[in-house]
Structures are given as C-alpha cells and as structure tokens.
Image (cartoon, rainbow over all chains, first blue to last red; front, side, top):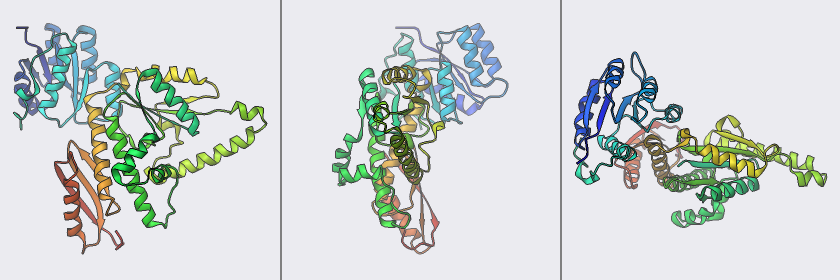
Length: 139
Length: 265
C-alpha cells in the first residue's frame, strides 16, 4: 500500500476545516488544518505536502500569495483554491498562476474529494476510491 | 480543454475561421447545423430558429417577442448542454452573448478587414457601407436579445483583424491562445456552464406559456423571477414551481413574483 497523501487545509473560517478534514480523511489522506496563513506557510517550510487546499481571501496573506510561496518552495505540491468570492477574472488569475483546480463555496465535500483524487493521479499516486464508496455520506 | 467561441463581423469569415480552428485542434464544431435537431426536439421550424438569431421583433409585437425569447432559450439550452462535452469550437449560434462568466470559454472576435477581391473590383466603398449597416443591425439585435453589444470589442478575450493578420496566422494565434492556463477547464467553470445550461432549459420551458421570466441556477437549485398581477400571483407561483420542477436537473425551486400592472403577462 502506498504512503497516504499529505494534505494541508487552510481556511480562516474554523467551520470549513472542521467539516472538510473528516471528509478528506475518509479517502485516506492525512490532513493538517490551519486558520492562519502565516502559520500554514511556516508549516509548509518545515514539511512538504502533496496537496494544499486554500481559501483565497484571508487576513495577513491571501491565497494567491500562499500559492506563490508554495510554487517557489514546493513546486510539486498541487494547490486547490476554494473561495466564496468566485468570479471569472479571479478564476482565470488563479489558473494562470498555476493552481491545480478552483472551486466556489459552497460546495459538497464530495466535489473536493473528486478534485483531490484527480490531483493524486496527476502526482502519480492514484488513489483507489471509487465514487460509490463515499458518495452521500456527507450532509 | 477550453471552449472556443468565434464570432465575426461577417458570417463567411466566422464560418471559415471556426472550421479551420476546429480542424487544427481536432475539436467538434458547433454551428447552425444543429438547428434541425433543436427544431425537432422543441417542435420548432429550424429555418425560423435561424431567423431568430438575425431578426429583432418590433417593440410592439408582444406575441412575436415572446416566441422569439422562447426560441432563443431553446437554442441556448441546447448549445450550453453540448458545450459541457468540452473540446468545442462554436460559431454562428451567438454563444458569445450568453456564455457569460465561464472562464474556460475563450471568446474570439474576428474583424474581416478590407475585402481584397472587392477592392480589385472597385467595390470597396460599397462593401464598407454594407458592413457598417450590418454592424448596426447586429448591435441592435444583441442589445435587444441579451442586453449586450456584440460589436463592443472589450467583451472578447482575443480580437484579430484579418486586414493585418492572414487567416492561417489567425488560426495559429487562436490555437496558441487556447493553450493558455487561464482558459483551462476547472471545477468552478464547469459548474458555471452547467448552471447556465440549466437556467436556459428552465427558461425555455417557462416561456412556452408565460413571459417576463428570469432564471438563475446553482447546482440544481433554481431561483425564478417573474411578474404577475396581485390576483394571479399565487397561481403563477404554483404554475412556475410545477413546470420548473419537472425539468431534468432541477432539485429545488424558489420563485419571486413581483406585481405587474400589465394583465397580459
């Protein structure tokens, strides 16, 4: 069995981390949750993560700045952006800067799990979790 | 991969470039040829459907206007649905006016430039005059149909003037730009497209029997805005909920009906 994917989840709203952490763990990932982008970046300097799931609008450092930091220090990490302020221009900007995927809040946990499975495949570590294994398990 | 929507100030230019781009990229070409299928599906005359993309009903032709809006919604619904399949080049279906906010839809405007053949025959001035008239008509139509001016070049992601760039170079430029990361498919943009497609399907169903309807969708939840007199308000809400609820993909309907002093709608 391959090593589980390491995921860092960054969102300044505590409820997001609280809800998404178990949802992502369900597909076998190891998840660390952060609400402060500065602390998240410090953690990423200590440890390399396979996937970063980050909000865009945050105090202190926004998601695009976090993305920039990750690309310089850990180019292998796949970055998934989640935002409640999705607009076409922002989506294009994020995509142009190299995010792996972009999703608007609110979304179903299953939507994020599908993106993580896609990212795992792109990382060369495909995860074997057919959709029906975890569908409809979340509110 | 992105959806490439091509429009031009002359139909033959639009068709020619779109065909070449589709061929170069190995994409499916979405063109007015699909009108026959749309017609069959919705019991409408394909010729009439093509005409709806050109002619604007007069302000006072209320009944014609209702039919026009319904037919446009049928076209929109089908085009947006097909775009969900991805790898599409679209022309001649006015998609540049209703595919809004979809980041992987790249909108290209082609300006025909001076017609060399016409110039050789001394017909350049006439061709220019014809094009100005055509542009005025398209502006009027696009404003009436979608509240957007299709001749406003700031609406497009890429504008190419064939007076300065050869058609083959234009095709290369378009295929090159389509590879930019900004235009790649993402979960958000697919959802935006699916929402637009659902809104168009619901709109088409509602406009069969009513007018003044606006529909917004999000992930199967549909919000419908309409107008009715106080007396008809409740029955209209019930009818809208019943009709919209039957559309495939709709799982929740919310209706907002404002008072309308016009008893026709």
